[in-house]
Length: 384
Image 1 (tube, rainbow, N blue to C red):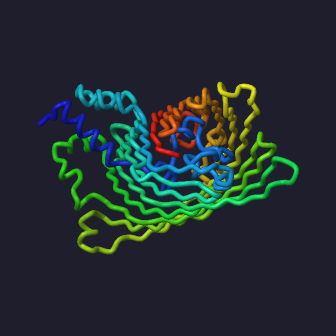
Image 2: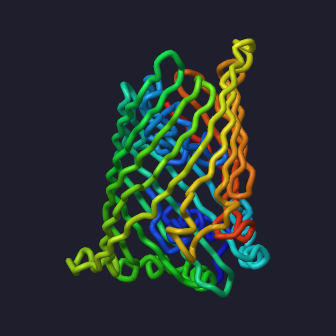
Image 3: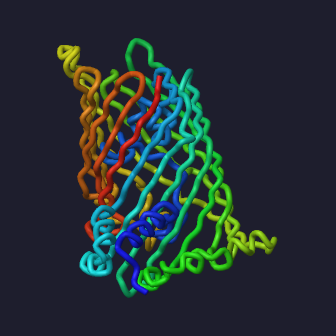
């Protein structure tokens, strides 16, 4: 029996909320928080450490952050041609649309409602949860991957440094420790088989056939940041210097309930050595109108070619460029360029809360332009 367009529409929404593609390159993903601000600025910048949203960029910067307390926050990110596929599902021509697009990646990521923390007196701590959902469709004839991930974790960091006498120069050092718990589920079938199975949801998501992965990870980031004359900063961030992940893989939900022994897997997440430069010119003569001009340039994951070997990414995908300026101490405008794709966004600081949004591209393949996806991200933070 053929399903109505509206029924397919709601099923597609359901799949998006419970699934995430986490092994595009055959490895586990990092435990990290990507803010709309950094996404609009062209990815993470090792030298940008001036508020709590950049806690995962470089722990050496905690020393330079004035007290920043985030009571709560929510961030949403939508990936790929989601609106096109929803309209196609309503109209009943979803298969035709996917066939025309070829390889398709759609997703939804949510950070929160556990999203809080503080940076004060060189110390930083935070508690987060991340829900990621994604559907990856290589083609109508190849297997689609529908999977989901939930992370819950906390971080603690500390920064210290040296102030050079008779100058405004500083050398700061820092570290960040993290502990997180992870749950993952995934389905791998041809998209045509998935669509034909939607009339029998219990069979598609049967507890006896749906794999379940559970585990935890611990990790440490370190960083160095040199500040010259309050104008130029040069920084090195080593993200996931050592981050082992211990996963217990069950054949199904039923096997977990029945007490069957899982398959144990140990994964050491790859290290990310990134270097960045931040330039902040003195524009005091624009006081009250224009403020906080920042220009950033980074080379991320420096040793990718040595650590990932055959999965190493093209050199052009490692460069990041970003710029930001603030008008009337309220509105921040941002632009960036990362992985060969543009980004832009804005932020509104109303003191009681902050609203940020970004539109940006990301490259999912190891070569420029082979599998680019576009993202819309927005968030609200209650920070003081």
